[in-house]
Image (cartoon, rainbow, N blue to C red; front, side, top):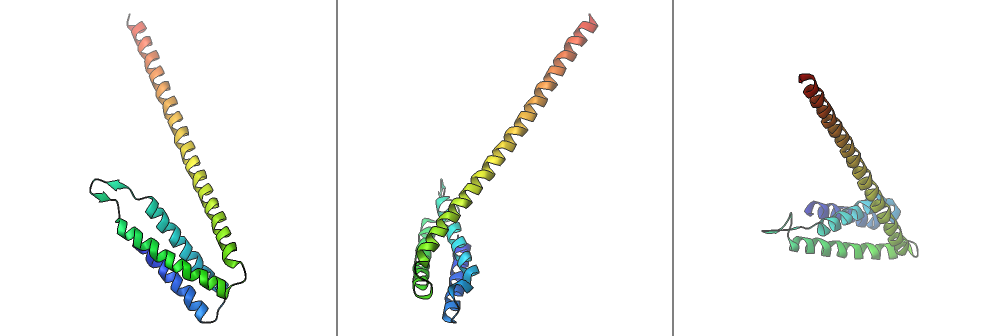
Length: 150
């Protein structure tokens, strides 16, 4: 999570530097994308926290809180940049775009999970068919052996 926070801060600095140099916000598009991808990764890490016997897995609650606060602060500054350096309603359109992109990512993840489940199910069916066939052949072989010996 610390790495993602570092990536987000670096991306934000690139955005701010581009705006201060007189460039348009659109010229810093890659940095904006990097910032929000890092934000998404931080949110995933916070949501994936698992309680273990000795505390929390991978990171502490304080680290989560600090990362979330830092991202909120940078996001507010980015909001102000969008208001003063962008076109009218740019921030509103960006939030809608983010929401739609999040839905697309979640749908893609669900589709991948569904495909993985279907592959496991098919392999399980193949294994069961093979095992049942093998048991059947062993049974028939045993019966034939029994008949042949008597």
